[in-house]
Amino acid sequence: MIQVYCYERCSTCKKALKWLDENKIAHEVIDIKGNHPDAEQIENYYKKSGLPLKRFFNTSGMLYREMELSKKLPEMSEEEQIQLLATDGMLVKRPLLVADDYVLTGFKQAEWEEKLL
Image (tube, rainbow, N blue to C red; front, side, top):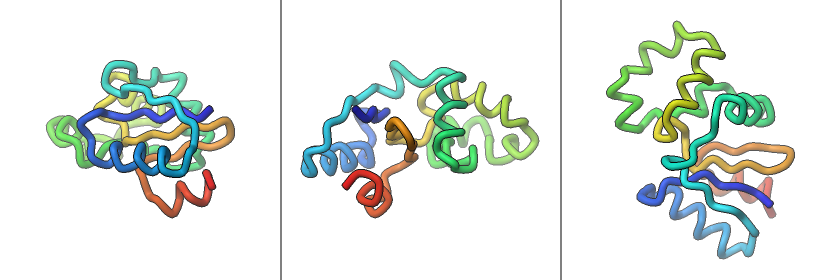
């Protein structure tokens, strides 16, 4: 079963969960704030996704802006970025969909349709 890391107050997460329900796709919802992925999981998801690590950051989030990460990330190693992502679920792009053989960040309906339907 796929896992979807979400934040209950996130409108994009709500849209994604509604889409999953409408398409009758079984999924487990995980609260990204209270039960965020650890460094090992982040690294695994990153490798499985084939995406640039930057795509795992919630670049529109308050915490990202407060920490001025747009300036700091280019100077950080991948390991440092992974460790940072593991410190707070609010830094992680959501929803984060995790399946057996792929990972999707954010909700782009066409991308989800391609993988899930």
